[in-house]
Length: 458
Ligand SMILES: [Ca+2]
Ligand SMILES: [Ca+2]
Ligand SMILES: [Ca+2]
Ligand SMILES: [Ca+2]
Image (cartoon, rainbow, N blue to C red; front, side, top):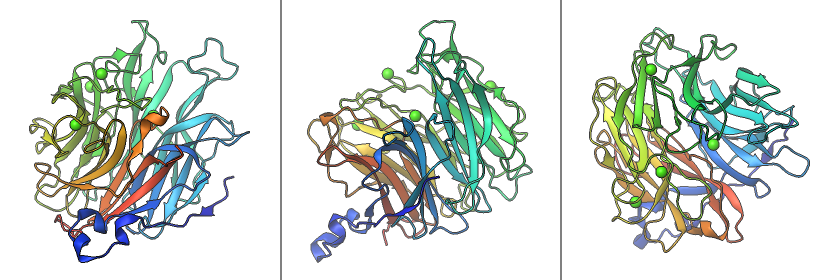
């Protein structure tokens, strides 16, 4: 199902203004294109991955509201073979007509991509007609043809417990004894949204040692549980990442702040959770005009052959300065000790930054971050920024994306939980939802090509 359709990429704004006056502006060389077609309904929560074998091949996955007669919300995959300039998309399999979302995509070392997502029905309903709660993984070589989705976990005729917010990570290191392992981590709600203190949230992990064909029994790795409300005191935000020696890092946000747990045996056992940082205001950070906004942590490891190979990075948003700011901190000793957080956005205080995501380039080790940004705007007008560090996350250069400022407040927009970004060899592709003048929501891609290891845009 899901016919492919071509999308014409549109280079916007300053690309056309090539006068000498504009050449010095950072946005000159950043290209903004449509990722979703005009008939995509409320696309959001996009994850994006660049193929390390062929960096012109890029896959994005996201959720979209259904057309009449289709499931309420379902997921789609979009593919580019020209580095992110043009895209074509198709709907994911959804034969049960469930609600699908929380998409994540990651490439393995050999150019196989894995897509994880939730697939459910019947939450927040006392006696639903239909109920399911599953997490699935499928794989692809080209982004067009996908394997049959494999359940990591799937409850039939019930959404208790509710399995939520998964992320997929791959061991891509040639030196790892566990290379090729596929890890999926997520939040298990005893009862989703429950205020009963007996109902808890847990961080779960499962692994596959056969390229996603089968998964292990889920293992609870969180030493302390959270509540089940889907807010500050709920355990959420896992992004499993793997270091050069196969060490697995899983960080999440909860009542104490961001904690991390690690595995040194390929995901068979995990250890004692360690606190990385407190989160001022928690991870649930409401901002005007958005249905939901959070600062859950994003993890990445430097797999380059540079000086910082093996450094673990965490990216998050909190309100330690009084309003939402984006931060990055790092560990060069496998998560034992952490640097002080560096503020990524370089504006004065007072404006909200939102929906951060981070990619550490496996070629040059640069740290690339994307977020929505209200700096320099009045009220709820919103733009977007990518920021890049070539000094191990200590300092960042901010580049305003050529996104026309849009007003979230005309409608309470649902952007989900995250944006997408990936980077290979200085080629950075970010994807995020924006609103048009008529309030129409679409996902755009920003393509930037930096000279590897530098701040210089090509
Ligand atoms: Ca979500
Ligand atoms: Ca643990
Ligand atoms: Ca909060
Ligand atoms: Ca701010």
